[in-house]
Image (cartoon, rainbow, N blue to C red):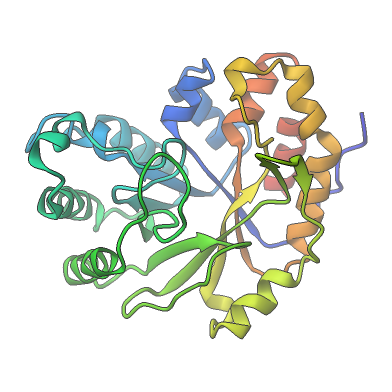
Length: 303
């Protein structure tokens, strides 16, 4: 096992994305895992997810129990939160539709109504820092279609009309996205994946220089303070999923060396805000007596 990366104050503001769905899939008690992220790792910047199927399991009836818990616990610790809202949101299968929406024929109005309820509930919350509308809406990944530009612009207009006081993020794939500028977004969020899986070539490593993403965003008209890394890969890309891959094989794809290298890589990228992707997997490994990544992250977040 390689040594842990040295903590330094010369790094971006680091945060994490947390999915209660994914934590549950990994066999974790998601509330305990979340509190450990806040108290043991001492994370102060979080991207949380307003899953439509959890919030509106029955048409017109809203249940904010899980997201209320996450936001209230973050507020107790003076953390700051980005709330991702929309149909296409982080974690497989990307679109998290409630089961009843199929009976409606997929009209847009129920989606806009749910977004409205989320915005109204949290727009005055002291821990809210920004909204994210959809997740990589124009990038075709997951078991759902891309979101139309027209609908994303309607969503942006809706959020801005309800809450003009918080910035709004729209995200895209760092490697494959075109970073299209819309009318009302304030921040571009990009993902960075260095280890991926290809149907023909298997696991591959992308050897792009860390400054590639900053150069690309500037070339496409973005100012660097307005670009955040909202998804920095810090877990393996597994074709068959964690539940079908033993830990030893997971670590063959993404191990402590990859973890350390990705911290150094993104720290050289030139962006000042980075949200790590994979904190649930670190907790899963820690529960399996593989705590090295969790401990490295603890050192980093506390620096």
